Image (tube, rainbow, N blue to C red; front, side):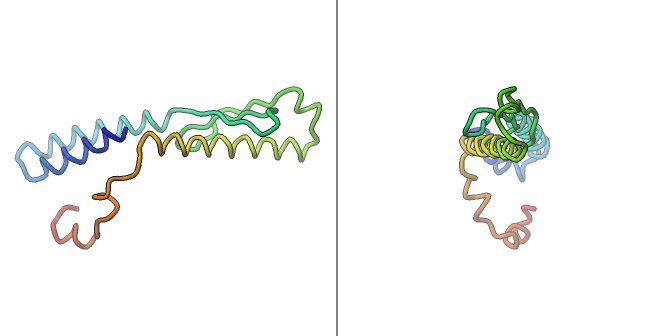
Length: 125
């Protein structure tokens, strides 16, 4: 994904002012959007420390599935079961954030260190 972001940025910078630029930028944007959508739909699973509850979330953080072991119902009180569910979802979301960060990497400096007023002056927005 990191390579894809760099490719998109170089394509958009290269074709910004050319005659073929808008069509190539649109194609690059569509491809970027599809790649991001695919990345965000990936799922990861996390469990609570006791292993009674497992939660699956997308890399976007959306909870998609929860598994509660039959032993959890027998062995845990209602507040303990609630805490186990919360811990499993938190573990899954932490893993999702780490996985997303590893796939995307740090945002390129040219995206984070730009002054919005300068972009408007250069008519890049």
